[in-house]
Image (cartoon, helix red, strand yellow):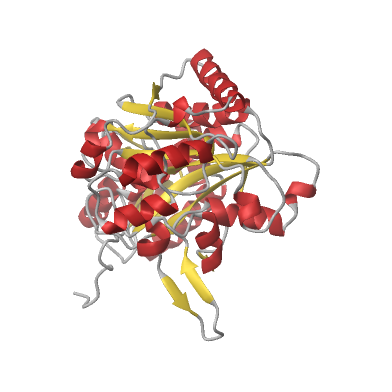
Length: 420
């Protein structure tokens, strides 16, 4: 027994359960790859200022949850708490926005790190698949991303999720609402930290999950009542486009996201079977983020879907994913000559795209067949001394139990034929 354990608030992904997480990642990524999004990967750590400027100095992520450290060279870095800002940084650094084909459409899959109180569905290390469309202001782009996320979840078989939709306005109308909200919040019985947050970014208070705070926010002014004509028209077009695509959503006038960079369209995917940690993903438009981190004006939109919470949502609905076995053929040699021959055949099967495994360690027939059963293989190849003399191998169908002898030189062709 090792004296070391995974750090608090983290987990290990181990077979066979890890196959479920891989299947979720693939299901989320598939419609993105089919819609012009290319894969991007950024470092697991970035300059602290990237998140301070982009995510927001007043957010819980920056003030409480980032893992910050200083390198031997004196650089202040942070483990990645979210990936939108790093993706935009990478696009700007590589000048992809100057290639003449906007928007730059990318997707990513990776780990994020936040120092939070661990509980089911909330971890200090978690995985997301995300998509970003950078450099275009178009309601159709917002609608596309919402539709693709909905498509991903439905492809997995999920049905009991809801899409919440709102508009956070823009630089023209949000300041007017911000002032009205601050006036309202100043009249409430709030603690000092919350009042201080209200002065820096009052929209953050709307996202406060504490019941005593939410109770006082019942009559808070709503941003939708302050939207300028341009934002109203933009939001209405997003609503019309996703409705025409058959995507069901709920208008949530109090929805705000936990990051400061969002403007206009904002949305969240929630699953009511997950308890307090009901959000399985979300995103929105972030038209000013590029300027915040020193780049040119690049209106953009994106989302991130939690792999961990999506798996929990599948479990809540009792959905078992149809995950093919990792092994199709399991070879069982009995003796050194059989070992040499079957190992060569397993190698050949693999080269031909057949998932094959081998009984290692010189196991006897009984133990080797148990290993074949545990592997989930459809077929077992058994080669003993008598078979060697006859130039055949025993091919056993592990589902039906039927067994037949085939020529050693026919193994690859026969199995390719049977497995399709």
